[in-house]
Structure formats: structure tokens, C-alpha cells
Length: 574
Image (tube, rainbow, N blue to C red):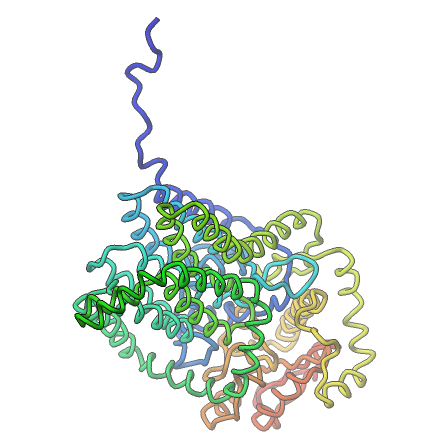
């Protein structure tokens, strides 16, 4: 009997390639963004609204670091703006999380395409973790027992993802112009996302140069690419110099927090730090004889090649990447820490196949202890979130557009329903707490009931603004909020106050009011002042901006929101 497969062609190899997997995942994510997915709200979720604020400002012609100040670089906000333009009804946190792929995915495609020519398994081993961390909107550190999407730390996760791309390129791409261009674009993206990520990447890149992974002519090419792009951006109303100026200001406001942050990193990531340290010590000990021989050769015959051979040691690569990661995390609250260590560990696994069994198994075990905690924490939290999402209660809102695509546990929602009346009845109690520097609870902003209440309260405020405008025949063309986040211009499609900080944290990002900021605040049509509850941050923001608002007409929208109207706007009722 003839073989029925005779004459049948095998599927093209490209259909089962890493590049095909990347394209399929991107298509699936696009489909998900086109749906009105509802996700469980998470701790500090209101950080997501900063992206909505920035996107509206960009839509209105404002330029980051020129027309408004931001806690991070402009790239994150532009990527979100572009993706939201394509998917206007997409879930905001998923839009923010996946927007990093606009830059990161093409760079990773180049890397895996090159790797696939040499080893398909190795290419998949680099790509799959990249996709896992890019997709999951969760951090390694959990701030609540119930699962939820993490609005906090989105740009930190993006920074770690870009460092993953950079490290993968430095470890696996050949020393050629392709590597120089990928490294340059990765460093440029890091600079325009978060300056601490750029510095961490610079440390890793500098070590790669010293180990001979990058030739000096390729380094010059990379520097030329970066400087050329930055020069073009600088021509856009001095965007780069404005960004650097804002960084200097933020560093000055937060310099006293550096040492406590180091202690926080070591305490929260001790599992990974300790395992990687043991691995580095083990590698040093097992390779001490060959390292000593290389050092003797360098001493007898000094050369850049001999020096590079001494430095190009696995234990040093692990040490440098860990130092870069620890430095990065001192400025992060919520992240996918140390994911960019995986390419170094993967290269170690590949090389260890030739080692004696006992030594090889020891390395495998230590690599597992180093790599597994991060990936399991991130995926576990995301899978928990997906599992419980169908059982959760959707936010009871109608006027906040896609901001309303969140849900929470029914018990928490029952509590949310009680909070507005509770806060209003006990306003003096919370005022007294705030004046003593205390929040209503120790972790107020991490509590899911507060995050859901803020959204429901914002929905009521939007309804009240619309009713007020209709009753008085006016339109407030610009809006500001005396709170951490200000999504109202985006919700109502209005302009936002220029020159002020988005993500307004008066303890970390908002300084004394400048003359330019005061003029912009005075020109704002409507300033929203929330009072449910009064908090330390809201009191301090009033102290900063209050002198620019002392001549305002106060309109009580409801029990929790006052509207401060610019002088000259006539109203029928106050």
C-alpha cells in the first residue's frame, strides 16, 4: 500500500518559528484590546489614570516635559496614546501594559530571528519569558490578598522589559552592527522611559564593552544613533533638556529616600538576591583555576583581549546585572524585578552542558532558585486574576468611558456603596487624622475598596459637572484636580492645566508653586477639590496650589466634590 503522505508537503518551518509565535501573540492581544474586557481592580490602580491624563494632554497638543511634568519619560505616554488611538475602547491597564510592545516587540523580533538561525530552542527560551512578562499586568510584590491588575509600577515593568531586550542582545547577538543598533535603540527607549533604567542599562552595556561583546567602532555607531535621535527630539521645543531638568528636580526632592529603598529591595527580593549570590560564588570557586591562569596571562602579556577574557566570566555577568537590578529597584514601587537576569542564566545553562554532572546539576538547581520565584509570582497573580474575574461585580459607573472596565469582589463592592455617606458624615474625623499626618488607614491607596470608591466617586462627579454645565449654559474648557490623578479632562474631552505635575504626589513629585505654574492654575476654568476623605496628600496639595485659588467661586457638586470656578464665569447657583 502506498504511503498516503507521499506527495504531501511539510508545513513551512517558519510557521513554527519564534517569530510566528510573536506575531500570533500580538494579533491575540490586538483582539483582546478590541473587546471591552473587564478586569479586577488592583492596589494603587489609580496610577493607570495618569496615562489617561497624559494621553489627553498629548491629544490637546501638549508635550511631555515641556507643557507638563511627569514622573517618567515621554515614551511610555506616547506609546499609550498611539495604542489607545487604535483601540479607543480597550481596557486602560491592558493598554498601558501592552503598549511597551510597540518598541520592545520589533527589537525582540530581530534578536530571535538571528537566534533562530543558530538554535530554535534557544530562540524560544529567550522569547517565551519575554512574552510572559510583557503580557502579565502584575508585579512580583502583592499589596492585597485579593488578586487584581496592578496599576502601580507599569513603567517599572516596561523598564525591566526593555532591559531584558538589551541584555538578550548583548548576550546572544554577534558582535556586529546589528548588535550596535539594537543596543542603541534599547538604550534610547530606556532613556525616554525611565532614567534609572537607562543608568542600569548603561552599567550592563559598559561591562559588555569591557568584556569585548561590543567593538569600539560599534559603540561609536550606537552613540551616534542615540545622540542623533535625541538631537531631533530636542528641536521639539527643547523636549530632552526639559526632561533632564525635571529629573534633576525630582532627584533633589527624593535624595533622602535612597538608603531606605536599598533596604526595601534586599528585604523584598532576598530570595532572588541570595540565590544569585550563591550561584556567583559557586561559579567563581569552580572556575578559580582558569581565572587565575587568565590573570597571569594578562600580567605577562597585557592586552585589551586578555583583559576582556578576564572580565568575561559568568559570575561577573551575574554580579553586574544584579547590581544594576538592585540600583533600578531602589527607585521602583511595584515591578517585575530582575527579569533581565534570565538571558545571562540561559547562556550559563547552555555552556554548562559540557561540565561534569555534579557541577552541572548544582548550576541547574541554583539557576532554578534564582529564576523561578519571579516568573511564578507574576504568572500566579495574573492567573488568579483571570480565574476570579468572571465572579466579580463590575463597577457601577456609566460616565467614565473605558475607566469603568474594572470589577471587584462583591463584599468589597458592598463596602464601596457605604463609603460616600460614611466619609461625608465623619468628615471632621478624617480632617483631624490628616492634620496629624495620618491616612484613614495604614495602606489606604492599596485597599481595593478605596480604589473602587474613587472610581465610583469620579463617575458621580462627572455626572454633577455635566448637570452643572447644562443648568448654567456653560462649558468648562480646562480642568484640574487637587488629587493624585486627574482623568477628568480625558473623560470630558477638555484641556488640562499646563506646566503642573501629573501623578501629583506632594511628598515626592510636587514642589513649591512656580510663577509659571501659578499663572496656568489661575487660568484654569474649573478646579475639582475632593473631600471624601480628607487625606494628608490632599491637604498638602491645597497648601501648594491654594494661593492660586483663593479668588474662586466654590460650587458644591455633591457631598464629596467641590468645583472651584475661575473668576469671570457666571453661574446661576453655587
